Image (cartoon, rainbow, N blue to C red; front, side):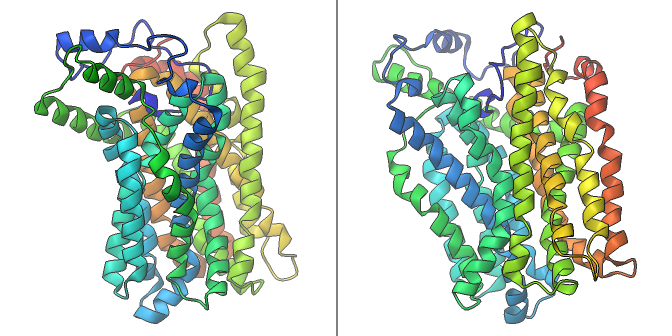
Length: 492
């Protein structure tokens, strides 16, 4: 499962004091598995030796898929009033197709990851996309709200497996130096998709006479290029490719027993959940990245209320208000790259070994940006203040959110190494999408309450202040937490 993390820096190697997890293979089978390697450096079966167009294709498919998948979270937000009108629902109930779809993102990767460990990455792509398309198509075609909610949940669970295996595919195809660069569109997808979804949904509804179903059909239009090129995908997992080649030439059996397969899947399912709740390091980092991510989701409700009541924006104009958030995301990528080159990589070249805490420079820089943006957004919107003032508050929110996320993911990879980093990243994703699903459910009620929009927004800004010290705490005390962890970690 360690393959399933995009390297944001140099190769992560197992430290001498790390303990490997028990192998599901027998000792004889494990010996055979460890002996498998490419025959020659230019082995044509090695994905890194494929023609350039094939490597680009196999990188573009998960990036476009992830964007369409995540845009599908919020493209339906613009249609919430239409669902309320057609089915006679309250806003909270009408939001359920958005909520359960997002909850599915916390489940799908935990299922797909251990399966991909056993059967490779291609089987996840080839099975998940048809399910995502079919379930969303049933949801869009239905005139029954219960069916809509049920199949949106199934679409979220089945389609989100790409979030577990796409990073591994990129690291299979590209060397370490290029994987981080090529992986930027994939890394941005879970942030760009939800931020641009309301804009996409608003414009598609305008085009098709406010038919809410098109806010789901548009997701399938985005995924159409992926569906057309998916049959061209080949297996990229080194272990799976070598296993199939070994089996074809009958050089020995590496077959696992059914009980071993079940045990491997169970471990893959339960470890992220355990780390999310019982591992202090993973728990605190999960809460830190998840809160600011959830604030992006809270904008689905607060933007609609604030900009429609104060500035009388329509759905399309509200969708355009997310563009500064996207600008903040792009600034975050540049910020992380700057600190990686000027700090982390420079020390690595000089000393050869760098404590994982040096991955957190970008998070230290961005730690105060989210509260600044949230206070700005809370108090700027009012009669007599131009709409551009609160809209620009999205820049520091997006900037701080993604600098924290990129730094934390890189830190997790360095801390847990090849043994548990994939599970730790999956645990982080559980928090993000659960909070992202929950926040839109109560935002409107809070903003409509007697405290008013300014203090309603300030509540979230004050809460974000509590989390500002988190990256600083890890920068100075992370080594102690790593040494106390019950999981195998980098103890340097």
